[in-house]
Image 1 (cartoon, one colour):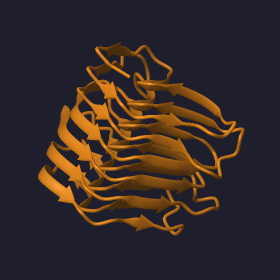
Image 2 (cartoon, one colour):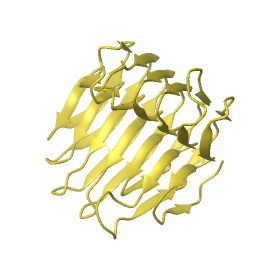
Image 3 (cartoon, one colour):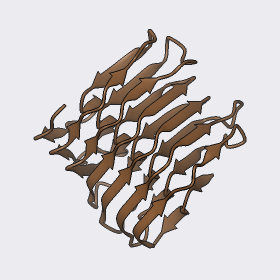
Image 4 (cartoon, helix red, strand yellow):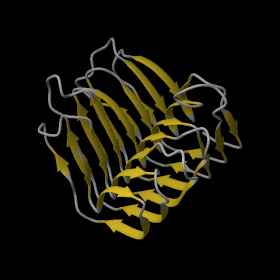
Length: 239
């Protein structure tokens, strides 16, 4: 399922100056690997894509049902997911979320204030610049989460001059034993999802948002990055 205020899936598209002003409420019926974005649900870079100036202006309330299909939830205030594409470089600039994001997930959750999940081939670059989240995030998950003020989970990318101004709150309903990767900018990151040589750079990013954890969960928490399994270059960032 690709759910969004403007474009469900962008494949080989030019997207510029798009704004969503309609609140989206997703109920338990969306339970099979849902990808949600306030403006775009999924960006597929297997064809040439040009994206600039996307803005989400409103709050969203999202929930995922139970059962065998409730495997994974991916959601972002503006972009749900940026998918792998080995054929093209990809640059997405000037993306903003101004709405509150409330998520209740029965499956594993990848949630970001701007984008939920990024996965890129190490053969091509993924550059994401001037992404800003101004909305608070409240999330509950039954099996774990990657949660970031800007990006929930990301693999092989460069994040430049991004900013989070929203608070991050772990809501009621989370079991105490689950693992949570929580970062003011990125929740979880690694070099790539196949072999070696993928690179990650997080440069000149700022987190002004408070991270609130009231439950006795197992957290990996960082003002900029929550957890990484690969070498990551973090430079010029402020928390």
